[in-house]
Image 1 (cartoon, rainbow, N blue to C red):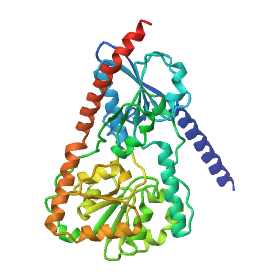
Image 2: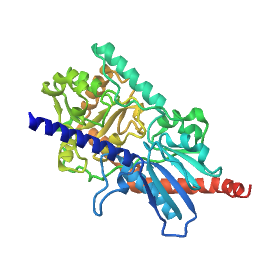
Image 3: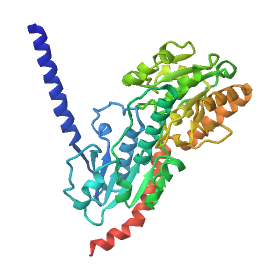
Image 4: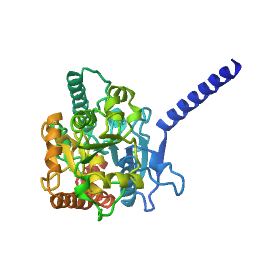
Length: 402
């Protein structure tokens, strides 16, 4: 009994320590100095992880935001600005200096508006569709699941809505036309920035397209209903001759795992792997045994999972809301995102000749290589900030003398 008591005390101490550490991290600010004579200050409200790495520690590849936030800071440093970075969950930060630019991804801008210098240029950096659309789309999918299967699951991607686009002067948007249209109501200038990919893969020279024509992949992060995995499980469980491999954090959504346990673990043609490092040989082995990625998400801000898989040569079969530019010669955009449409599309793609499949794969790989790399992100982001500096610099000069 005494041992159990000691353990409970130790667990409580650990919990409190982690909670305190979390609060400190939430309120932390990283300050970076330009190597050039400073021309002003920039605040980025995004993520902190890439700025707290130990020497030699690699940038996390679990999400493109880590490298992209670091590159955004480097861009302003190169222009001669000193840069402060806070986590977008920081709920106590207030500006204590003048900022030439405030880059926002969630909630801090609307809270800090009364304390900003009036010549501050406010840029909303959108890595999701508008949160009202995002939330409503997930709720609709959950309702459809309830009607289809008679089960109610909890939203996993719900976010408290923000008004960043309404308080911003302009926005940079990672997604395509779909994502940009969800912000159109605000009538603000929108600049598209191509989402990056964490790694490049060689062309799969030895891929056997005849052998993999009936093998498909679902690869995604949290929010399994949001990202359409339930639809694929219903579809592939009715197609025993077609195989679905699942790579994602399934064990972190217990409700979903319980509801679809039979499909996930007891259906011979469905292979649940779990989360896989995209830089690993295991991931390469999986994608080289598959023909395409099927991703009927209901709302995305750039479709990073799809882009990453296109880099490996997978054919994208995705929803319009996945926010990836898809052409008929290398992919399919689902119109209904229904179980029946998914089944028809999978069967139709699989019936193409091996040479047609190889041609589609090549074009998918080439599109990703041409449009979605770290180099492309850095180039377009720099060019966009240059445009914004030129456009709003005059405003800052005028306000300086008011």
